[in-house]
Length: 228
Image 1 (spheres, rainbow, N blue to C red):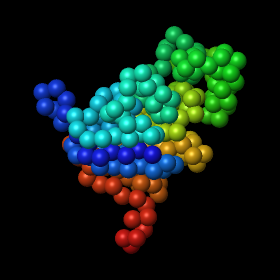
Image 2: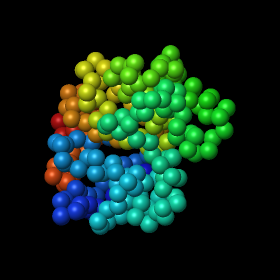
Image 3: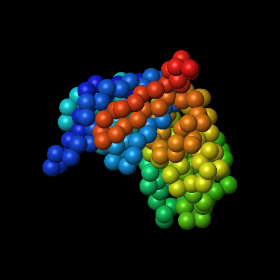
Image 4: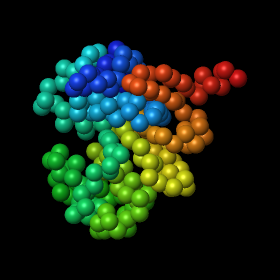
């Protein structure tokens, strides 16, 4: 579960990232996070993985109190929360297999166990044949699958996807969203930040909207159905 209570984030020189956010995401939900550039979507994700701390308020993520979490426990939190970064952050001098295995290596997995887990995830995402290729040899959609594979390799409870369809065509975008829905169907909580309103409006999922750091809309499909 994710719970934010009166969360505010102010940056240097008083720039407001988020203001007085109250938000709960239950285990197993799929949520679209929408809003224009600068609305606070990435700031919210950075708070959830304790990349930054709030200026005020409390944040609970997967039973961890983000504000009180000791430095030495941050790695434990990040095993629970997988992130697909907007910039992907793939290492260009390493193969697809080597990119995906990195989180397991950092976590101290035995090499045989890590290899088996990577092969499972690559197969799940349909990119096993690319295991020995380098990122430059893959298409945009394939690279997104690699980034998702890397975020899933530690079997996180929560997956944060920051604009995973941002640079993809419509067909490939829908394939990536279907993949995220499949992951969600297996019990992983998914929050997807996106500008793609065609996809958002076509899915019967909860929509959270941010604007200038404020939560201006939190609407579930059930609420929309009830309004009709």
